[in-house]
Image 1: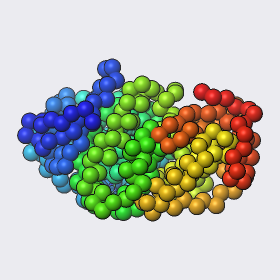
Image 2: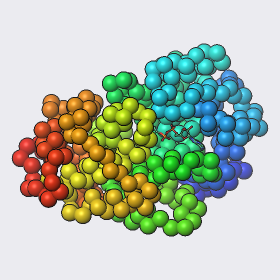
Image 3: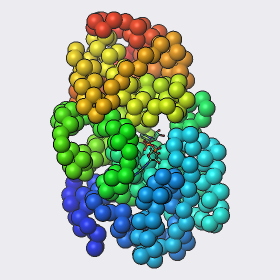
Length: 379
Ligand SMILES: NC(=O)c1ccc[n+]([C@@H]2O[C@H](COP(=O)([O-])OP(=O)(O)OC[C@H]3O[C@@H](n4cnc5c(N)ncnc54)[C@H](O)[C@@H]3O)[C@@H](O)[C@H]2O)c1
């Protein structure tokens, strides 16, 4: 985290700048920031037209009043655009309902969209903002742990199609990210655990220190959650700054996601949360890495231990025959090969192009490490 500062009369916030030329913004992290959101957002307004608060029905019930009151206190008029909670809303139809809301309030090109909610809200509101009148400004106010450490940062926005996750989307960076850990107080425990799966992912790919901190769940852990959020956002912002459009290093953030997305698709985007699917995916990817001889033996067990500390015990009885066709429709594929993220060890990851045939063999192989694969290549 770069520094701490007081923003006018707002409580002390940690600030992580995201340095993207022409599209730079700050991530602010601090207790009590939501009730001061109006003061933070006010300098971003281009006009007096109402801001659209895009949110789902759960988040609106818990936190909508707090945000609306804060905007009102700063003289910002706003209108909510509320959709049914859950991944099932992240569709073209769900998106269309947001456009209806924007049209009803006559949101202009100088308007502002505020995404208040989890990753579903952020992805949908961000994509709606990217496309409404060819692009309007937006602010992310993430309220799930997953969204606070991951989806609200980096500007990836999308909706799903029946063929796969996030197949329609755009890169559209927010103007500001406001993270108030207080909002996690109403988040169901299952959702906290899902966020922890993504935090464990950051540790696995980039920071053994963070990984070790997450492995031993200690009493009072949630009191230090702001530090964990900050560490994850710092890793994500550094990677995004170097590879905004996801042609190289940023793909490391997909550790566990290739398999996780396939599992979400297999289960119809509903029975498993995104975080649970990623937890499955990380154990599959680390197991494959070990069996192919790329990953230090025991790494997969370390990941399972970390996940187990958060009651994420991924035993996914996957039938490779079912998984492979789903993998082959992933948008990151190239000619019979899948780009998957493998670990060398905890804290160090790399991207590897692996033929589907080899993935299938490794998925079926016993746990004994094999020698390095014959096909595919290092990146
Ligand atoms: N854009 C990216 O870079 C990126 C990265 C990772 C994940 N994602 C996307 O994020 C989505 C998953 O996000 P998610 O797990 O946050 O799901 P979500 O937005 O559906 O939120 C999970 C549930 O928690 C509820 N909720 C949210 N905040 C709450 C609060 N403070 N109190 C009480 N309830 C609350 C929601 O209503 C919902 O029921 C997936 O669609 C995934 O593809 C995007």
